[in-house]
Image 1 (tube, rainbow, N blue to C red):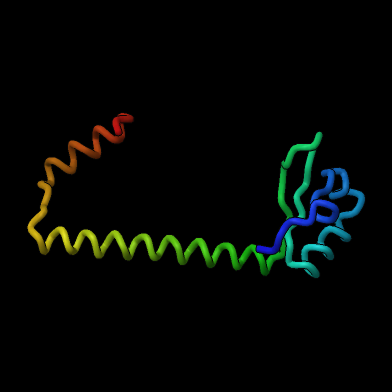
Image 2 (cartoon, rainbow, N blue to C red; image 1 turned 90 degrees about the horizontal axis):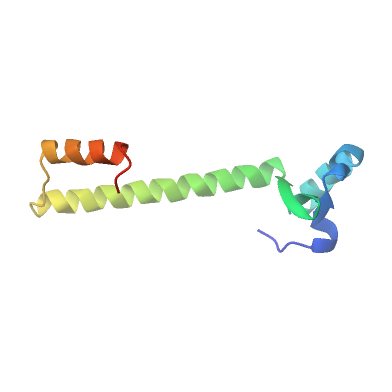
Length: 101
């Protein structure tokens, strides 16, 4: 993502109502998000649809890679004989559901 330009990309939330079209044009043309603030603190981010879709695709790719890595590790554990009984898994899941770590 492009570097934030504080002079252009940080705007008070009141600009959303009074200059909404300008904000949409800015995020579309620059590809950078606009950060909306209230009392000097960030409260929301406006992104172009294209940038939002890119972020979703990237997150999906990371999640898919993590799942594939976990499956490879599980397969290696099974191959090496490192198995856990179904009863032990049930007990661990029950403890986890009760808030245990």
